[in-house]
Image 1 (cartoon, rainbow, N blue to C red):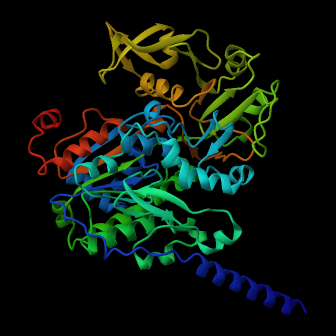
Image 2: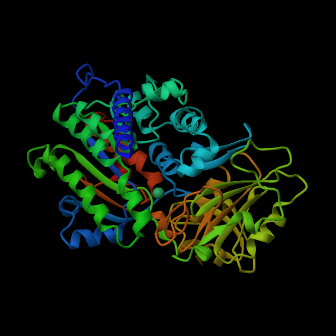
Image 3: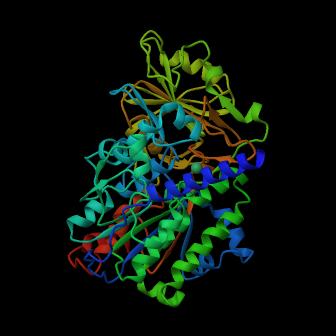
Length: 537
Ligand SMILES: [Zn+2]
């Protein structure tokens, strides 16, 4: 009897797998019908989630990353490029694509509270949190709202800017991708039956690969299963890119996103993710191999290989390393993520791993009163909020307040000018004459200011010291591993390898990459850009 039962269960599982495989077969897009104008010198940007300088150097030294080594030896290596803030992929990608911080592109973080809709927005943090918030809501946020209602229409993405000057571009597995081509994203059959995902009309670049929802390479059917994150994996990305190159359909600019290393760093910590780097290196090797020789790959394209954020370790001892904002603020009524925001909710939490937004919904409570509670906790390195046109910042367990705003008598190395007042050690600044220098928080003034102006609402930003992360119901936790989100240099600095050009961005910040990439692509197509040439050469 038992055996029959087992057999039946196995048959059922096999049937479900067959059904899912069939139902999830994506409508392959055909590359044949895409008329690609072959560019003279395409730019290929490989974004490797959570790639960091130290482990990369270590992997190269140990001979475990030959493709990275080759590109580094034949190009320029910049170990410390500054990311945007919070150091979460959607915000960073928006900065990369638009050349602006979040005050302009308006994608505040992975999780934030939309005051106008009274809804907590989550583009997909951890499974538990997503389930609590409702899969359908998260689908709508990630598949539609992110690119088409949250990402500001007042900023232009690289894809839109290139289209304007008649150059084509591609996006493979990037979450932020807005372009000028219209396309319908249809749910795979299984999901349409479950009524979890409606059809969305989206605006994409000329070539658009997006996991199981949009792919070109037929071989990728084996890489887009539900248990392979529906195609949001390195293998899928590499196959799509190789397919473009093999079929001579590579457009002027391609951005290809490699998500797998991030998980490895979250689990293993920031020092030892060598296995993860070794794995992504194998994909790079295969991509370079498509050209016949790696030298030819170098000759045929400009390669930019970079990370999006770093990560800082999270201590092993859960009781200490996980900062429970709910218990610090337990005298207030805090919104329950399983429910819509209620009339009597006083506080909403928007957690982005090592950074969090704390929203004050109760007009009878002052921000300063909430800050008093937060200040008791010395695991919080920065607590910041808006005060009129100023930004105020204090630190957990420390005395003093620091106040700043743009436009003043102090300038920094990025030609930004600032009014500063108070205890500047809170943001680890050094001041020499009228020059501001940054310490452990790179470009902190512009990045913190942008995040406090990224969306409407009465909110506080908290940022955790390395070793700690913020947690609440269902949020991801990484004790003994690593996390990001914070403004600290451990989360904020990423390496970048560039081959095929000796020009570089005006400053080593992700926010400065867009004008430089556009310049690289205009070379040869627009001879009248002397002014731009001078700026970059
Ligand atoms: Zn991550």
